Amino acid sequence: MNCRECRDELELWVGQADLPREIAEHIAGCAECRTYRDELRALAGSVAEDREFDATKAERAMIEAGIKRRLNPDKATVITPLHWLRYAAMAASVIIVAGIGITGYRANWFGHRAGVVDTTAVALADSQTQNRSEIDSTAILDDQDYSALEQAIDQSTQLDDATVLDSLSDEQIKYLESHLDVKGLI
Amino acid sequence: MVEKEDDQIRPLADRAADGDRAAFSELVKVLMNRVVALTYRLTGEREAALDLTQDAFVSAWENIRSFRRDSKFETWLYRIAVNKALNFIAHRKIADTVELTDECAGAVSQSADDQLTRDELKQRVVSFMQSLPDQQRAAFELRFYRQLSFEEIAEIVGRGVPTVKTNYREAIQKLRKVAEEEGWRP
Image (cartoon, rainbow over all chains, first blue to last red; front, side, top):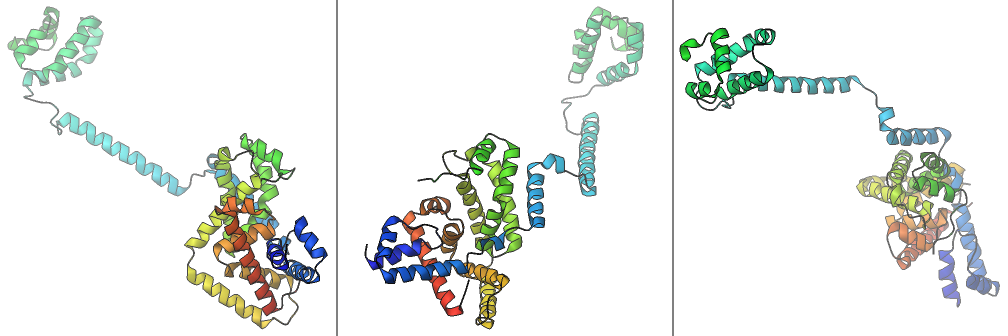
């Protein structure tokens, strides 16, 4: 190793405790390179106050708290007034959408009741609703017949009178005659 | 070649890599000052350094699964911290850096003949670091203050070893020049 190579290498070892053996051997026999090594050591000493950059106690506490908070978001979550406002707005949105949906469904805003909604079907549906308690209490129909009747009423929103009536069993027709006053239709 | 990890850090890093939060909290305590100093000298801003330290540890925990046990945890953590610091610097206005450097140069020339106080020296180190290009600054920080090998630095900054050596040598030469011109003494 010549002096130039030694000095190039020395610059790479500024601030390091130990030098590679090759450099150390060269320096041992070269006063000029030894002087250069000492210059670099003094230079390193002038900027080596590493401890000066340590975090203070308060800074450490702040960093640790920040890390803990960010790694435990659930525990650190606080419901602020802003959160409440956000939740209330979300709830209100859901209620409004549901209200519009239900109202629209009932009023057929969406045209989902295709075809003619005949008076018989409406009468049947209304009667079914109004007389539900009566149906339950009188228990004229057994469960199977009752389900079939409900299905027929639902289907009736899309069918004409004759089809509706054809789909009913004798017992169902008998029930309608006696409770819903639709004899004139039969 | 990866050097042996600090006896205190290695077992904690292994446990943290297994998902042990308590071990990770210990690592935060052990390594916090080093990361604060690193990010402070890289950015020149104390507040930013504290935030970046917090960010670095949070990222480290969130990506702990990607930590390879055959590498040094400290090196892995520094890579995260250096990347965050360099990103921060990249987003900072260049004008701010120029202003800071000019201000510091004025302060230096004003008291160049006086014995430097520790605070002045600290400020000069930060100013000097800020005057370096990013890659030289990172190389100087990691080599001089963190005592890392060039191989480790190359891994952290994502450059080749020869490039890192060149960056470090250039930083040392600038330090020599500044120290001579301004009469730095330890």
